[in-house]
Length: 171
Image 1: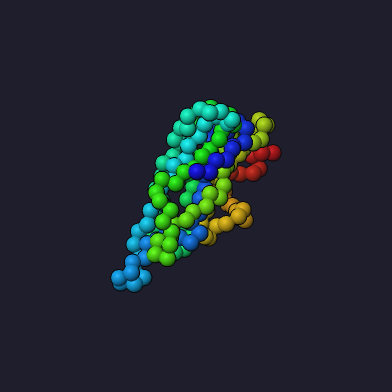
Image 2: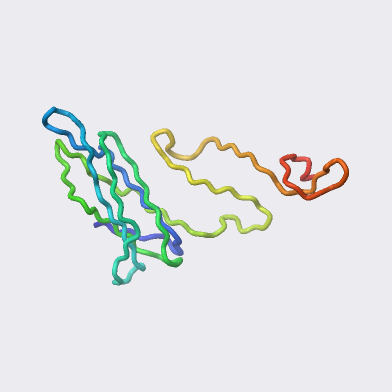
């Protein structure tokens, strides 16, 4: 088992893992035939620095049949904003050899907080959950959004409050 600690006031956590050699079982007869391989992971938490019992946040099984990298991320809520110890334990044997590939690495522990990142009134914000893959690694280079503001707009006879995408309504 491996243990890491969240940042302060964690509301949720995301644990990300990679099986960089893949997750696969190769048969000997016929040689090279691929079968499903599974790897179980248990993610537990407790208050930082205590000897409280561990509480299961996620128990998951990753499954694969390829010798190419596999990424998985698991997110769960914590009971209250605090600093937590997070422990990851493998629940299936690590039987990696020439025929079985199932070694994983714990890449990241992300601390999520349910607070506004911009403490200002009248500011619109956008939140996006994006699943990374081989096609997306690193920051998003382009993001397009269509949105409307609720503003006073001329409807032909009077000014009324309504959703509009016309930037002139802001002036």
